[in-house]
Structure formats: C-alpha cells, structure tokens
Length: 158
Image 1 (cartoon, rainbow, N blue to C red):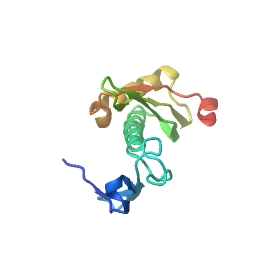
Image 2 (cartoon, rainbow, N blue to C red; image 1 turned 30 degrees about the vertical axis):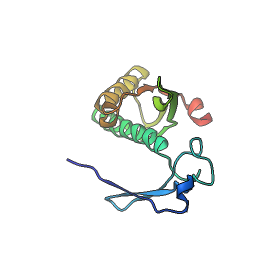
Image 3 (tube, one colour; image 1 turned 90 degrees about the vertical axis):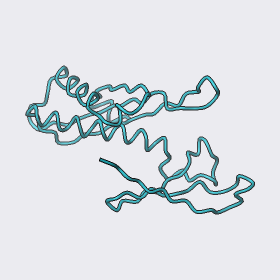
Image 4 (cartoon, helix red, strand yellow; image 1 turned 60 degrees about the vertical axis):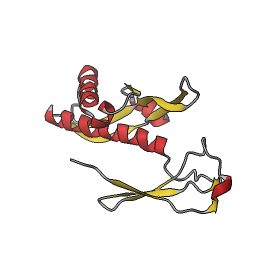
C-alpha cells in the first residue's frame, strides 16, 4: 500500500539571494489541492504565505485527523453514535541539541457531541487510548502525542 502526494513549486523572486517565494501546492490522488508554504514563523512574509498550510500545520492536522478517524470507528463499534467531533490540535516546536527545531509534542484536544447516551468519561478516554494505539501516523513519529478529552466549555473557548 502506498500513499502519494505531489508537491509543486515554481521559482519566483530572487532565488540566488534567498528572496524567493516558498509558496507551493500539495496535490493528492483524489484531486484535492492545498496551498502550502513555509511557516511565516520560519520564513518571513513575503517569501512565505501565512494563509497557506505550512508543513508543521499539515503534520499536526494529519495526526489529529488519523486519531479522529480511528476514534470514531472504535466508538461506533462500541455502540455509541457521534454527532460531531472537534479537535483543537496544537504542535509545539522545540530546539534540538544541535540548535535545530522539531515538533516535539502535539496536543490533541478532542471534543465529541454524542447522539443519545454517549460513553462515560472513562469509556471515552479508553476509546481515545485505543485510537492513539491504532493511528498509523502516531506510530510513525517520535513526537510526544498528548490526548486531553475536552469539556464542552473548553472546546468552545479554544
């Protein structure tokens, strides 16, 4: 099984001087296209595009999305019916020993609205643990991933 993403960038600006656009696009096999760029926290505007997805945001979104998909499936198998799911996922960059940066931790803050009787807090936490253990993306990274089941008020404020 393989998964393919095509990345397309075209030169604009003064490449040799380092003043060139980092804007590019991600193309996926289903036809989706996503505007991408370096993070403006790393490469200043106008060489980056703040409105585009940067690789770090894409990484955090991939982890959160994978976790959600497994969680919803395990909840369904357990007989619970979800109405909606929201996650305010946050990636934390830290400096490495050699002075580089990496996404050291990703906090997932999921909130699920249930139809009818939802799981108890203990059951919901167990479902999230099961989802984390099953998530292909989480298994593929060394970043710490912390899941905190959100209360409704916290989810709305986030």
